[in-house]
Length: 185
Image (tube, rainbow, N blue to C red; front, side, top):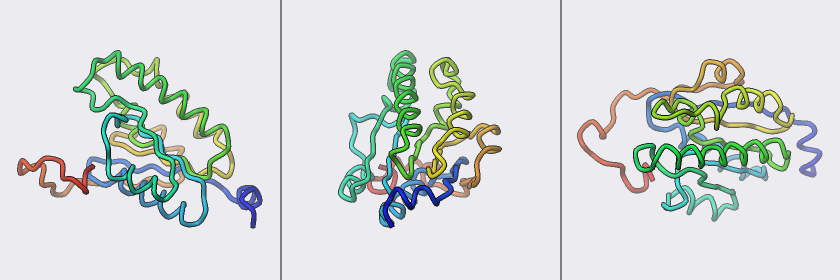
């Protein structure tokens, strides 16, 4: 079956991975690998991670032919609010264009929920929640849209077809262990 035929016969879903536990991005990456294995065209847009760093998932996914782009400037404490606002404005514009363009079977908006929850600087004028909700409603019929990150807004949870909440039960961070190569990055 050709990709256009497969797309016309498929209902795309909106999936949200949220919560305070580790594993939200990991779940989305696993879904991306699975979809790619089935011949789906997959795009991962990372809203917080910076292209200035290398992450294990980038190395592996590029080998599989999955497109992954880092659109952020890093953690909120590493850059000025204006640097983050500029990056998020551009990331949101790119995400809207890619989702509505209809070229993809799966689009992952990694850590978009984190971005929407930023309180250290104004976010609504560069990443408006109402526009994210409109994008979910207007996405192409065939597209599976995945949103990850902590503190997902109730309005996003309401629109989603699937919501998985990852809970923190125990984490080695609490024992002073920093991010682990191959697990966190």
